[in-house]
View 1 (cartoon, rainbow, N blue to C red):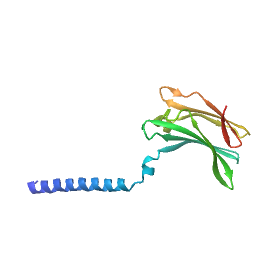
View 2 (view 1 turned 135 degrees about the vertical axis):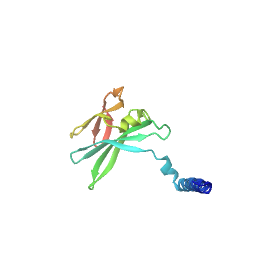
View 3 (view 1 turned 45 degrees about the vertical axis):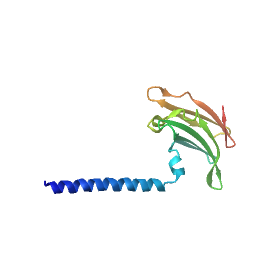
View 4 (view 1 turned 60 degrees about the horizontal axis):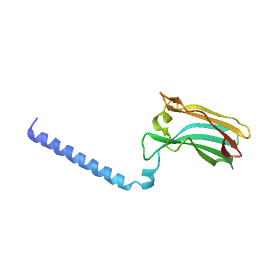
Length: 149
């Protein structure tokens, strides 16, 4: 390999690195602050109770601590053929869960509902593989609202 060929590759690699850095900076500058601040979320459980209610559990990753997460329980009512949120509560403490166990396999230890009015609801989630599952949290869904049991 000649010395001139080595220099050309070195210049090309440096030029590509500079171009990539410029492209990333321009792309980041165009990103909206809301998109950058929006927490990552993942639905971890869902249940439909007859034709009246849909209940979901969603893990929300903390924007301050990449290992922390919160869990949102949402209740939806069927209105005019579409699901409309009627209530939401946080399961446990805000940021009180770990993101990776919540979004991995076996994250939901117990999620039980019933199609009655009021509808009992029990939630138990994986704390960590070594600690196991949380104590069950008990709720009641009555007329589209969530109440602690």
